[in-house]
Length: 157
Length: 168
Image (spheres, each protein chain N blue to C red):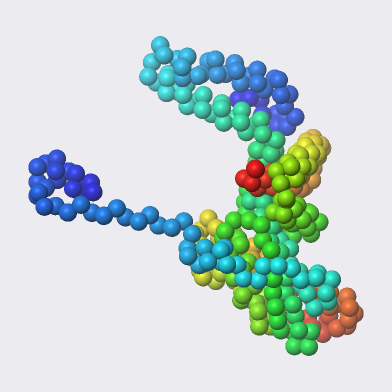
């Protein structure tokens, strides 16, 4: 629908928004008054799907997970990992979040997490381009952990 | 309630029909989970460089959880004398690891390897969607034992390790 079939992870931000607006012009419920019931229902359903697609594609992590799914890998299947380096790092970061003295300290960690997300998002894109699924999975796992830390910080702010 | 309404609609309800009390919504977490969450046992850390300590560090990337479970072993008897945990995750994950540290205390290392996630889940009445939290705890126990044995093998040399493997 929004050209993800090419599995092109690096979507141009402007292009995506332009396409989103075009689709909504055609499908938005407010713009289909004069159409028949069936057409209205179809438009409402498709409009919701477009919003969903836009949100998924607009979010680095959700997009990466989706692209992996297209490759047949489901990162959301519950499995235990024991990557000592990553887990030790995450443990330390989560502890720092818990012990953070004030909002300032939390925001600092949050911005570190955003940097890491950007870095691993790029690693993911590289891995996908070179068809290195193993590396892609490693990148997404990391992104998932950093995103989780961001969630915790958000709750505390 | 539907029956009452339809009865009324059909003019069949008697004037003295009692109103049923509103049912209390089932709790989202079993009280044992709440108990472990509010009063977690054995939170903390041992020095992971201590030769009598085994550290299990596991994670569930699907939800971004991380669980650290440590055991302190009596080197003479192979009995676990103390345990600590640190878990960052949902209430069920925290409760599962708390239960795990309670259950491993006083047991032999070989014994704790047979602790099953289903037992932990049953003890906490975990819903199916949270079963993986108990699995994480089971994996953490195994990882802690494995770590301790690996440290012992390094210290005592390969000969000792192969003797222990034969005994297991």
